[in-house]
Structures are given as structure tokens and as C-alpha cells.
Length: 257
Image 1 (cartoon, rainbow, N blue to C red):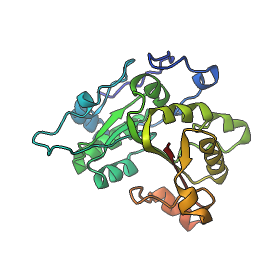
Image 2: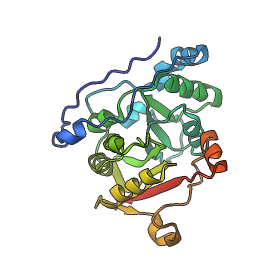
Image 3: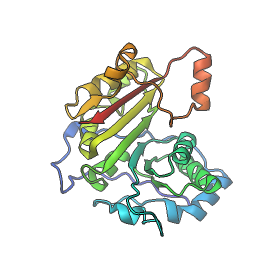
Image 4: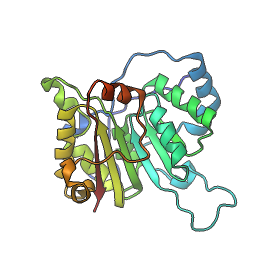
């Protein structure tokens, strides 16, 4: 059965005030057309019950989402990372494989992308991923406890190139404020884009959030606020093609103070 992707109007969660009217209009996605392949459909049927996390209007119990591993050594920690918009899941699967102790909650509403990541989970044996096929803004509002995340990944969000469409970009002040509230102290927010004007906006918006500070500013002043590509983020086929064409890629990494 193919997963459903409902779009519900946000309501205020118990631990914060109602969203502003501006944020209420922001979506973490634009629905794209696309058909599921037979392999993706089979992955949804076989692995969906285990790895698809239904949207809910109350806070998550992380121990229920990621049950403790039997016979696990005492003191082992499992960082929690939220990923917003994973596309077809190639980078997500790679990161989950190189960071096996980290647990990933990944939001994506593109049905073929959900099926593709589930297929990768099965092929690569990646037990540390859960997928919520729902608008990430509502997931943040209603499902994520304050100070519960060790990291947030937002890689190559839609840049909305035309100036009149810039208001549709995901990285906006209200959303970043919500993400900052859900990060633990020292937790990080990592954004990447291949569109320089969007990179400049991301840097400006994150710099304006008082609860965040730029990790790269002191260590890499030559990068003007941008960060070296962290080791865990792979070069995608799309990114490699862009580099060959002379296009830049900008990583921005801030942390919760």
C-alpha cells in the first residue's frame, strides 16, 4: 500500500504559543509529480510498518520510536538528528551508514523518494532511520519536544530562484527559531545549497537567531561564515555535476548556544 501524505492545518502544541500567521503559510515542501517504481512500492509494503512513522499531534516518545538495543553497553549514547527533505534518500542513506550510532528522523512527502529511501534501508541494513511522510513544519510544531535534537540537516532545499518566489523558501526566521528551540545545547543546524543567493539568505537568517552561533566563523574566517563540507555529507551525483560545471556549493553550520 502506498503511504498517504495528509496536509493538516497546524495547531499550537502544548509547549509553545500558536504559530504566527506568517509561519502558518510556510511549508517544508512542494508536492512534485512522480510515480512509484515496483521496487519502491515493494519496499513500502515490506518495510513501511517498521520504518514509517505516522504523523501525530502529540510529542514523540523517542524510546518508542527507537527501542533500546538488546545487550547494549551501558552509557552508549545515540544522537538524534532531524532531516528535512531527503529527496531520493541517497545522501541520507550514506550518512546513516557512516554514523551508525546516530538516529535519524527524516521528513519527506515525495512518495517515490520515501519508497526509494525505504528500499535503501532494506538493501543497506540501516536500522537507525525513521521516516515521517508529512510536512516537517507540522512535525516540528507537534511531535518534537523542546531541547531533544542533537542536529538538524537541511540539504539543497528548493531555492525558488525567481525573486518574487523567494518568500516560499524554507529557510525563514520563524522556522529557524522553532528549530533552535528543539536543539540541545551544542546541537547543530547544517544547511547546504548550490544557489549562492540562497546561501547568503541562509547565512543571514541563521546569524540573526540569538540562540545560534556560527561554528565556522572563528575556525575558518577565510570562508566568510561558510563551513567546510562536513565529512559525513557525501557529494551527490547532482553536486558533482554542478562542480564540473563550475557551480559552487555552500555549507552553513551553526550550533545552539
